[in-house]
Image (tube, rainbow, N blue to C red):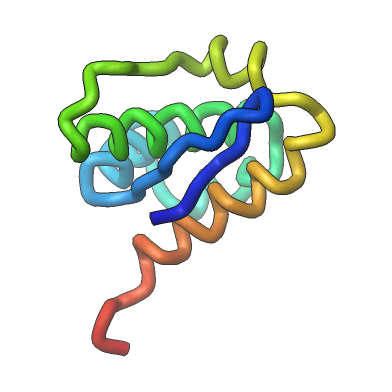
Length: 98
C-alpha cells in the first residue's frame, strides 16, 4: 500500500480497476491523463480517488473530496504526494507476474 501525506496526516492509497474506471470517465484515456499528470488538478483528483478506494477496501466510511485534498495538501507536501500518486498508478498498471 502506498501512502500520501496531506496536512501532516498519512492516508493509505490504492489504485485498482475502480480507480482506472474513474480515470477513464474523467480523462477518456490514459494518454489524455498523461498530458495532465503533473498538474495540481490531476494530482488532487488522483489522490482523492486513491485514498477513497483504500478507505472503501478497508471498510472505512470516511470519504474525502478534491476540495479537501486542495485545502489539506500543503505546497511543501505536493511533490511527495505527486510522486506517491504516480507510483501508485504505476503499481496498478504493471503486471504482477512481469
